[in-house]
Image (tube, rainbow, N blue to C red; front, side, top):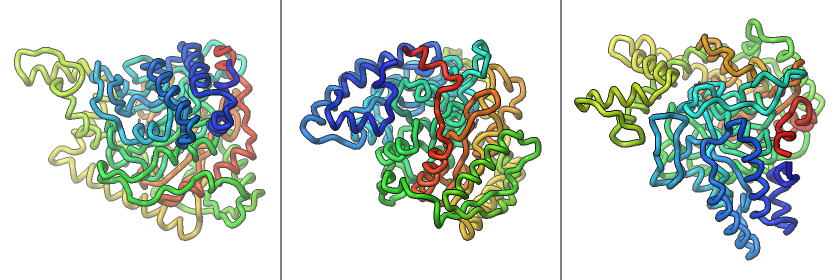
Length: 496
Ligand code: GLN
């Protein structure tokens, strides 16, 4: 592996500014790394020519002193972000050949800051999943292996699994992800990287293929907390084109890093001690508590009483919104069209052929909970409970500044596991959906290794628009964990 592909975003940025290497050199090293990790199937579309053009333009701006915050830094883009003129699939057959005539606001912001696009990353179809097994473009493999088991292919989590694997395998300095119920945080935990879901409204949703509009949020996936701070600063900002985008200034997130945890109150919600939680996840959580305590934080036991409803509420609200959002794929406006005798038959044939099983399941559930007669019993009830869940957090913020919890109930599992039982798959989201339903910022930071040598993440949830405190505490956990991506990690070998 080229040393250039192993740098952090921050180090690469500083190296470019100091003239140690050019963006074209950095980008070439990454294009090689992308090719070397092809067996992982992280990318749906590689864009090396575009990357080299962007890098050459960055080198000019670096030379003339006009460098932006992400100038010349090669990153990967989840294939849920519309990229003008570049195939955008959302991991679905139904978007075959779709080349958006517009650029999403988040990617436009990143490119305006100088970022270089290496390609579009694989993902669960329409961001529905926790394993990256539902992609039309095939599963993504996690670069990590269980100790002593070089055979079993592990999932990188989902839905932003391609982004997570690419960043973990050093085939991008960083990547964008999106998180509706955990799709940034859970894959970050499974692949030993940092994943930040910002506050709902912090990053524009404009030009991101919609899954569940009241939950979807874009965020950075990086190898360090500092890198997430840098990248979030470039992604975030008010956007008139998204009515739920919030007009509040973007702070200097990097300035929030550093210092200890004195003055911070960290809440430990008793309801997250779910039945059957594994001993190693409990131990990791306790470790995180101890680290923050020794950094000066005050640990406070709290209650988030409606936690147990979060998963059922999410699996009503998200499919309801998805069934409505996905109604637009009719064979007329985008991608795939399957012929039929009548217009109705063409719709049916296109949707039957274009959507995979998980997407169909969500559309069915969503249509059911929104249908006359069931709307009040399911959808409306779920909305009411959702506001109770948000209320639990509002009450908590009177007592604490952050909540600390595990990110996921397990380490990465094998490809094909949990596939025959959708409920078992949905359980992956048990710790991540509450913050999504409440619209809160949350980060997953690699905090340790499982007994099988696989990465495990800890999650910090913060007050609305307080990404700064989330990042500050994330940095403390990151430092204390001293996480090293060495054991079990094969990608570095593959990329040599
Ligand atoms: N795993 C969750 C789901 O399948 C979350 C997905 C996401 O955040 N996009 O819906």
